[in-house]
Image (cartoon, rainbow, N blue to C red; front, side, top):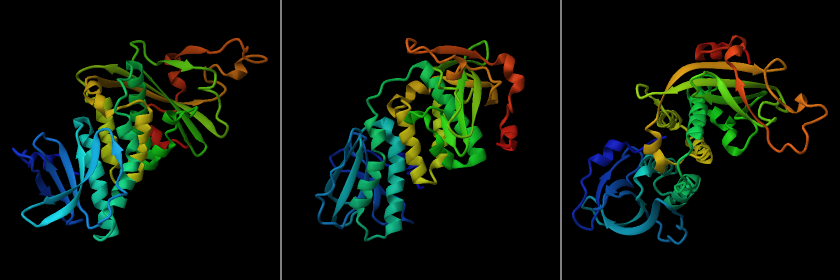
Length: 334
């Protein structure tokens, strides 16, 4: 998937008056496509439109506005343009992706295609991102948990299963286990405790057997430090770069990221914390694994107990792990 390069925006000077300063980009895809800045520094994506009926264009989001304008671009004649305006700096990264996707779709459909139809469909896919702008900062525990899941996706799962493994990420959608694909379910736990692999387990269902297949647990031990290159933002950006080749997978990823509690508007806050990877371990959760489930009680957990939360210390169980490195994980027969 094409993406508007951030450096292209830096090549445009802000105008002094009410006009836009624009630049023609993606010439290899379309002659219709421009980007521009207004005097306030807001970013514009301009698409020339030959459709005289613009009544169907009604997409509205926080952070992006779509309007129709009569403009003269690059000294040409006055033409009608669809103008997408981004007023939220935190949304620039996504705005660049949206622009690239629109340009590619218009090119795929042909110069005479209905640009409004293309834009409406693409903006609808990204609606979840703009709708999540008001979300507050995640707790430190939530940030660490999300970092662990994304780190596992980026550096363990994708090298083994490919980019479509994103669709197996069930945790943000309310799944009982974080990942479900084929006959395998995987739960991811991340600890920043100075005492090692110590995890909070919520309820008797979290480590219970899946309905089909086997359950595995990925345990990640990290430490917060300024000397590391890893952060929640670095792993998100790395995943976005990888997933840019498939618009549907990228959109699914952004939707799941939003559902997990992440909001791009808090990007600067999440960038402050860096994490050093101390140790990883991958376990089969079988009858020998230390856990509490419904079967731990006879005849059953009393109805009067509404919630059961416990700490799981895996430090003395590390010798039972299936692997502790990506290389060994790739070689596992699971």
